[in-house]
Amino acid sequence: MQLNYRLSGLPKEVRIFIASFVVVLSVGFYTGLLFVNETSTASPNGIEENYLGNEQDEDAEIMKFKKSDREMLTIVHTHILSMSLIFFLLGGLVWMTNISDKAKLCLTVEPFLSVILTFGGIYFLWNGVVWMKYVVIISGILMTFSFMLSSIVVLYTLVQKPSPSH
Image (tube, rainbow, N blue to C red; front, side, top):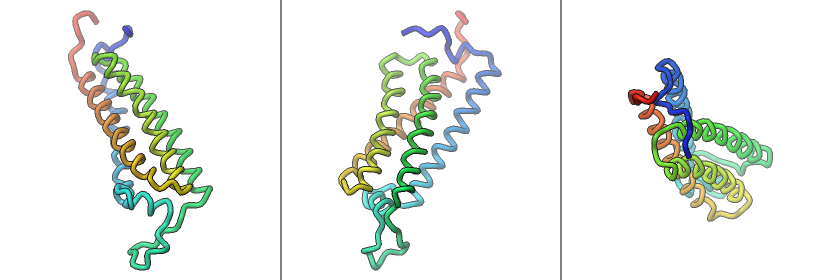
């Protein structure tokens, strides 16, 4: 598929603007990952404990309780909406790079599948399908790699010199 616009052909000021957006978006994304690590949800048992509680563990350092219906709907709703917008915007920029269409398709569709699997998996875990914690971890890792690769591809394209045809 051939688009008429390439990031590398945009005026320098627009490329700086887009690069600033991708950098700030990345800071926000990676801060979210730090939060996941801080809440002990970076491990299968940590994920389970975070949503289902740990009241049965008398030796727990921090007591956690099962999330309420309202908390779960808020978590799932806000994350699916915000992450879909993040990946839509970043994906639009990916489609303006020079990588292959297959790579673009992978980098722009995979994150949407991962968002549904990650946050849908959290919801199913909360409803007692405990093995979904593994789906949550795998899809979360894939989502993170897609974000990272997309950001790198976009930023790399933005620092390239415009081709003579532009």
